Length: 624
Image (cartoon, rainbow, N blue to C red; front, side, top):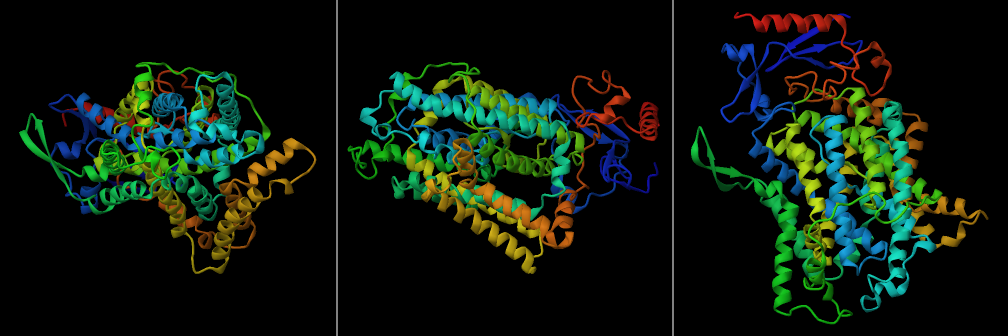
């Protein structure tokens, strides 16, 4: 195995090798330095001797305070872990609140709080599993809107539509066994579909099949698939926002102001450290928590307007559901602590229609997660994730979806892109911080009072937040077009037709549900769920046309897209083994050569690399 090129970086040596991984980081001349506060960071022999070359402007801009394998002080782990939890708060709370209306729970606020607590509890477990045994990058796991679209399509089937009396608050008795059976039947159906689809994701991940699938999936498949997630939910966002356009518009306005106009405005905060003593830190808090601040601001204003009796008292009047006292009793009724458990809503049920619909969400989630892994690696100062790490990450996400289905969150789990972006803001890429955040979500999931508080967020506030979030999801999908040749009539046709078909076909099927009749009810349900899932229809046409219409890889954007995944390799971690499994798995135990045949196990290092590392250790042990 010949090494053709060597580039000396700030903390390590980058080895270029055509035969294996094109970019592989080998840690050389490295030494751990103990900070005054007990934390550790990495430095090199060159840095220690004062012979380090002057850093470039790009290296100064991308310098991480803590790399993926570093251990920040405990108090910083708690503060930053809380920040990651708050960053994921908006999207995590929105999913059960949006789903509750579709499973006839719009007037059962106590059960809504239990759903919120459950999704936080499971998200904490999945985050710990992903960081410890999955891709091993600092990445949060949580609910996904990719599962919400096919779930709503499944619930639109005639047998799952809510009875009319469940929409009338005065007729709903949350303790009535008939009412409980109505919403639990729908939730158990979602649970079963998510669990079966999760088994497919587990197989794709741990078998290494994700690498095979990614050969045929390019920007023209991803763009319509992700964009239609947001576009398909415009009706749900409009229904919530339309309860009171003044409050929803104010919520949207606050989020836009905080995230766009004030994002670069620093705010002073008092701080203390051993070196600087008492001093002032300037933080861009509006850039960190725009959604949280927007929700809280609109929530407080709605509370004040409710106290002043600005909103009507009549449930049938416009603006009534902007009141904050509608769900006030749920906080007093909710217990302080409750541990969610598998099967808490009953034994999950399985149907072909629900399973095939959720599979479309699983495929979309896997594609998005692979991109998140690469983005997270670049931002936290880690080498590009090897294939075995990606396989483990997708497999662990499948296990997370299996747990979410068993616990009954009404959703699955995936990697949170919002928290990946937070790494670039804080410049702290330590996975210890994300482990702390996972433990925090686990504790919050058992603290039901907090879930009850979140369930009291007024409906138009949720609608205003969803308008922003679904718009961003749509734009993220369209942003994948930057990799393709938009001067090509081929590409313009594929994207335009896929997007239009993804909106027209589901709309027609929803308006003419009886037109699809094969005579076999299960097949009719499968076809209807798939054809009413916009992301499946658009993604299918994008995938089929992109792989059958002649076009070069450069024209299709495959070349540029792959290059973007390998970009910024000058900002790598000081450890090449950051993707190794914990507790000595693969290093002290399970070290046989058989590992090379397991798609999710770290591969044994070539003999020349092991010899190089031994020489490096000997060199570091000498005083010279």
